Length: 488
Image (tube, rainbow, N blue to C red; front, side, top):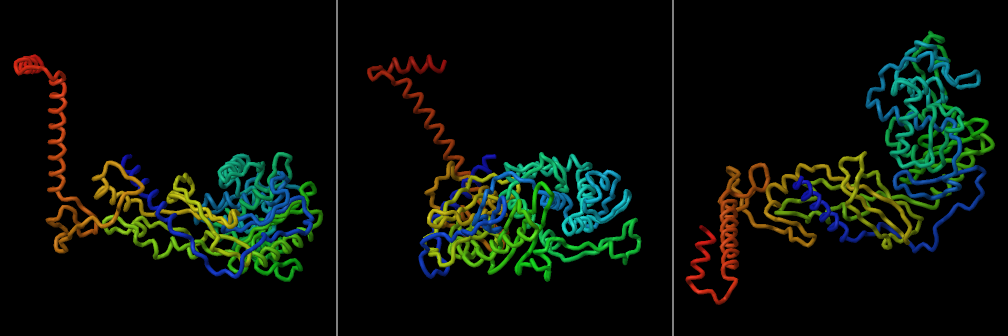
């Protein structure tokens, strides 16, 4: 436990050292005077645009207004499935009678599965996201959680873990229920999370897919076994296709209106756009395309790892006993994290705020994070990871136990040592063995123990004499008498 506290202190000191290195600018042309803002009227009850890699919010209209998700709920359904199946996409899902009948009527979108049909998880995910099949949603829910109700509990638990305070699910399909609601902001976070799985974008951006035959359509070549993507913004030639689109899902009920959650990539920037409560089918596509165009044309996004010199060779000198801590502890920032800012921004004005107190239950390697600001405006955040904690433990064991306490101003530079390359041992007090680990010699340990024991004895004697000679006028005989009484 003490070792872990020391390791934590080491990491905090390294982060402080990282913080002292200024953020350098990457190319700049002029100073911005204002942040570009989309000022057109959006024909929707709610809308939201954010950078998927920096989480920078670029536009919001009633972002926290609770609305009915309709089939946007299937994005969360897919996310829960992907969280739980690993790479086992070929596992078979059995359609129960409940799965093919619950909340399903003549107007409900299905693939026509019958009780007892079996399809792979992959087949079901394509059926879920392309035509928005409700029987596939029910079957996946039962496969993962045992029942549709228990799956809804998983959906709500996930929403809570993501910090979504205005979202509640009742079923995996998104069919209307007064107690099932979300917001444009929350839906963007759910889509952002789903995009962490490459297979999600691969599936949702597909134009068509042929699943295995089912009882109703036994012939493998039957066209009814082929599902088509009904999210027109993803389909080239549909009239609503958007160049650069990478993923998306629509949702519609009479009560919810027309909803869309989509992602697109241009110029190295990944944007998420959500529009909810549109009155017409075409409106959601038109509004999303207009929002995408404006923000792609007025903003840019850069990788923090490539932009911030604290993740380059300039930090290689941070070491203890010639042990490069950045390499040994493997402190890094993933390429995924970006900063997002208006075109023409002066990045010399970028400031950052660091924290090493982080409790991320989803990332066991997280040791801290850095937030970035431009003109006091948040532009991005990266999580710092230390993937080799065993190396930190080794550093503690072989060196830091010589110190009773670490301070932020401790000097870590070059404690002298010599290494015998032949056998990994040395006559030096501190040396490096064949494995490259720092080792304290037995001689030094013995000397330290002897010194500590001598100091304790001297301290004990001084305490006794301080007690005995508490009166300056004591005679020798009185002293002798007191000592005899004291130690009789």
